[in-house]
Length: 122
Image 1 (cartoon, rainbow, N blue to C red):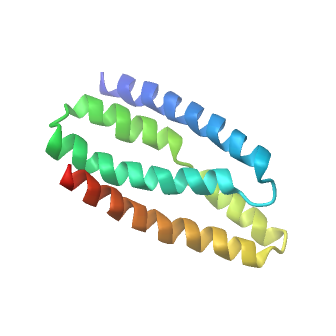
Image 2: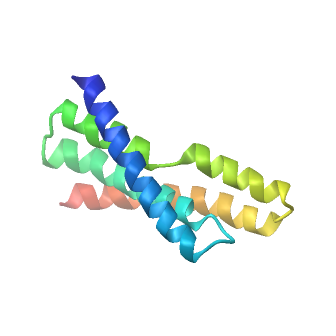
């Protein structure tokens, strides 16, 4: 049952990621903003849900697997992030690569922390 929860959640998360990133990239084509926003929002969501689902809602492990491992695992895009960051470097867009790589990592940690704080207070 746990495998099914991760499988279903991963498919849902990947679909959400694809739709969201496609929409964002139609409007911003010279920076991987879709992936950037997905990684930051995913960082917030995992920080929030890791606390809120366990400590506040006492959610069963299978539901946590579905939402955190599955949906958020499919939604966040670290492998895409690294490929796009590498692409910016190869193209010689060093300043954009710096903003993208540092911004994603710094804001990612910040949003995990923020999500955990909000999750603890609800």
